[in-house]
Length: 380
Length: 46
Image (cartoon, rainbow over all chains, first blue to last red; front, top):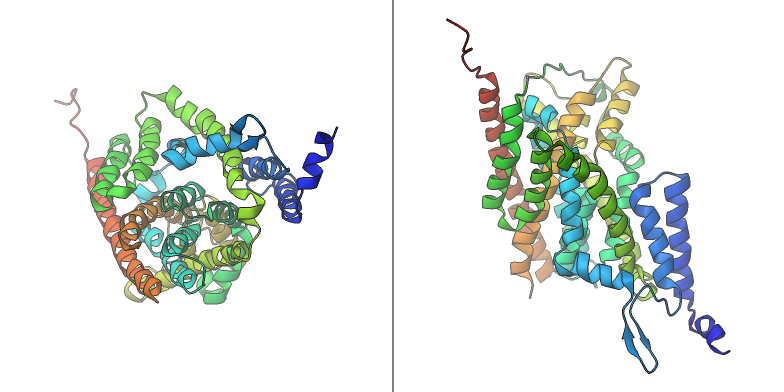
């Protein structure tokens, strides 16, 4: 009857820490409603893979050999193989995005580009920390994309050994946008700047324009950053399903069933990278710190870019709109709307912020593709 | 130190590429705006 005690003998304190982290993620998901669709499966998965001799991951059994664990199999198939899980999720996300606010107010698209600066500044900081290779630093910087699937995809393609902590940081900080962004915005704006009102005169967007847009963006992105073509292409394919009007069932399946199914599997699968020996380390703490830094850099870069545009523009832009250039949709736009109303109860910035926020979704994916185009050539 | 130099290169190349990409998308949106403004002639119009 020794086998009953076998797992107790194998139990380590690091596994205990990881099980506690798993429970913490479940608590945050259920009671704090922090990205529950991903943090709940990840938290439960973390418990599954960290129980001693867990059958959820590959184990060597006496007289039998290697027995495949389902979570490790899912990881090898869905993430390590061709990154198919995050890519399929992009189809679902694309089918949910409405680009019409951006098409009706296009000048705000540049905020999406400016707010990606945090990615690159964080890469620089990460390279200064011993232990992180360039592939790890680039993957950590991608937390600043505020776009979970892109972060997972880049870390996976660049073969970073910190995929687990990067994913946890990316999704945690996305959920914490309503706390992080107001602090960062207040650091670089005055109350009078936050009071700036903006006229909203949207142009009408035709159906034809909405259909051509995803096709044109795919071709442009593919020509500028070929490595981004799967990222952008899957996102835009999902959007085309939505906008074309003849694939309503497919669009609904992509935005609901496919997105939910892949999110469920992705959460469980990522848990494979949350085993104690990979996760419990000083580097994880560094990654959490760098992720926070990336979000702060993004926000400040967006705000300062807006201030810079105001130097040359007759119609002033509320600098907070720049902060909405990150990909965390719609949290970031809501933060800007709320802060605008706090500064002036009649200052409604939501539609402008939504336009910038949508542009952030395009720019973050583009940034991921560009990182994948540049970084591999620099690796030793 | 070598990684830091690479990171600085990634910074300028990355931001430049993103702004080029976004500018091209901006131009596409402007062109699409013109398409939206274009109204096909009504067949019933005499």
